[in-house]
Amino acid sequence: SYVLTQPPSVSVAPGKTARITCGGNNIGSKSVHWYQQKPGQAPVLVIYYDSDRPSGIPERFSGSNSGNTATLTISRVEAGDEADYYCQVWDSSSDHPYVVFGGGTKLTVL
Amino acid sequence: QVQLVQSGSELKKPGASVKVSCKASGYTFTSYAMNWVRQAPGQGLEWMGWINTNTGNPTYAQGFTGRFVFSLDTSVSTAYLQISSLKAEDTAVYYCARMYSSSSGYFDYWGQGTLVTVSS
Image: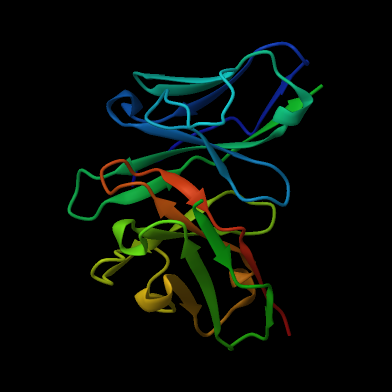
């Protein structure tokens, strides 16, 4: 089955840029979605289709996807961005489509 | 507005069963697939599978066959997750999540989660 690899943790100072990667075999050929999960809360979609933002998500959140790596970029990081972030793909190429999540990355704002 | 409201926390003994509900509102229930996602304590998200809300046909991910059953009651726009023969390792928060479309594969709305604790 398909595997998505994320770094366990990323740290960034307030006002700087955080980049969270999601590695997978030829992930650039798939659509990648990103979720933010704060402690005790349900996940929230922050990026879909590699780089689209749902309404209500700040422009500071952006995404890209190419080759074997997808990246979630958070510009001008704020204390409120501290959370776990998960990438996800939907493999619909087979007779039995399935969802895969990355292991998650804990973003710490220093 | 779209809402998915799940039933409350459950404390069960090993070997018992539990049924978690997910009541949808603010949209046409049968137009979107419902998925279930498990999150064990301190762990990541794990996809359990989905149910076609139009046909009632469930699809279970690897590792979630046998003791796990997805069902619907479309008359009350509610999806259910039943787990039988509970084990300690089933202790987790269970989320329902609406999939925007079968081609997109992303979850645009999530329930608040239901904590199921299995302990003797």
